Image (cartoon, rainbow, N blue to C red; front, side, top):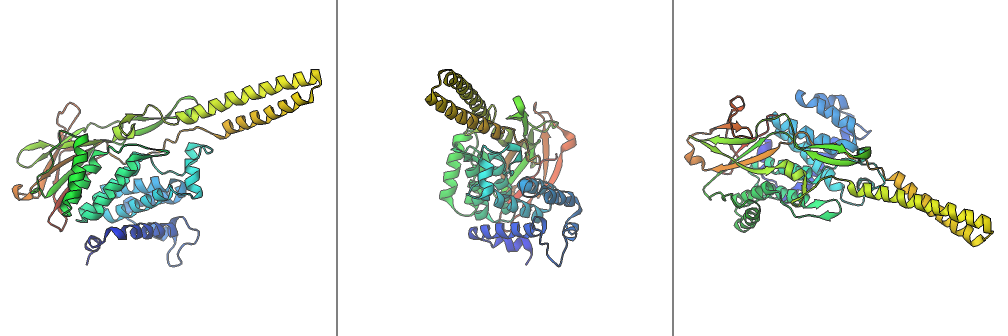
Length: 408
């Protein structure tokens, strides 16, 4: 029984065990000082596909601080080279680490604390990046016909989209709702599918739910990832900008005649909003805190000086005590301001696309397993040099998937 067929038999309950085993396997090699006796670290990396070896070296060099990001980037590279098992392992390690950041561990508390510079935190990803990690996990499951685990992954992605640090925001990640609905319907869970498609209709009212006879899903990624940039005094503010140096904005599928795929998700929109509300800058709250603390601390220490002068001239000991108290409080405020270092964390998952498009069809009407994928620019003018011919992948359970990753 091959590895893909074995994974088809896994239940949703087995997912946490798979995550844990995958993470521990690499941790023992890459991050633990106790390297297995039968294999050195160099031998372990040398045994990986050549195209992934530089990223595995980066994963080791970055340590725990950058492990989530480096595993995300490793997954992107593996996917683009058709190394699906390696991609699954990297995504599972990233997801396990992400889960650990929302507990009471020292790293979890540090990652959320205002007392540590943003750039020194252990990377856990922004909500859209964590959601996309679950998107890729679900897509890998869909490829194997593991509809239940796929639906669970897409649902987890929606939760990550809704969760943003200290507040809960409305999840509006449309592609995750669509994929959860598709997975539920293929698994025979009609009620769950109806719920997800009903939620999707609130976000994409012009999208038509696929008819039941459609057995093949087409997912096309275009463009480049949103970018994170530091801005403001001391580079303390984080701003988002759309990816650059790409032309492909739209995509079409040719099954006898070209039909434009539906642009279901704009990742720049997801990066730059929280629950549909546009974000101008991030860390503004911390900047206000720091500036407020400086102002309060300076005012209190200046007041303490005044009280000290009055106490000295009048020989009033009570005023001296007040001055001492103000001085202590003022010094604490200044210390707080100094320790709250608001430097923006500009690390981001560069392997993500700009837009995700979807299309569905009935394979019995296609006449061939080969599809032509064409790309168009923002003005919907064709980009002939990017045209691809791809083959429908049979998931072994009566369904099919055509998954076209970004060419960038």
